[in-house]
Length: 233
Image 1: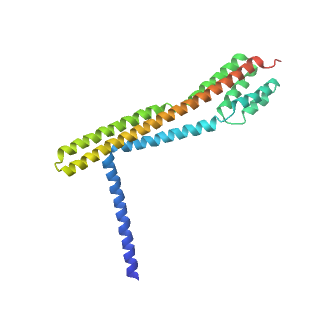
Image 2: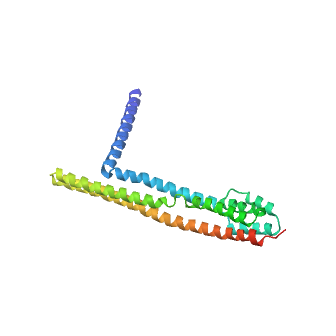
Image 3: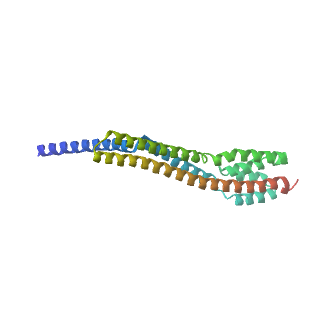
């Protein structure tokens, strides 16, 4: 019984060691087949996915406020002369549009110029927050394409180098297939990342434009309300 148990333990250790060695050989073989530019593009793809996820989460969480509804509530309070309640309303959440509205409301008693200046300063601070890292997707697309091209060139260099060294027809065919595989895999990954970056840039840019356009429209209405339509006295 004990000898059988010992044999099973030895067999398990041997199997685990063989699997670990096979995995190491597999990774080394994968690196040899695909080349280092392929793994650089894998890293770039992780950066791209992280950038897209961060932008989507940020824009969705920070700009989900209904600007038109907020303006309607502020308008009622301002027309009723309840500026303090309008300010408290805009202090209810940590959203960029709330900060813009609050900036204008807090300067009402200082005159039209103070209101306009305060609102414009907040808008200038907010625009870069919305646009942040979106344009970087174009640069990442170009970098991924170049690394894919580099991997393609290296694959062709390896192919012709192997063909020059090998004389056996079977080995020459194998070397040719391996080199072409390396070249095409790098090309496909680089172009795939680039296409993903471009599509994401297009969608995020359109989303960004809609956010800024809607915000500017409602902020302009607020500015007119505070400088023209507010009851005097």
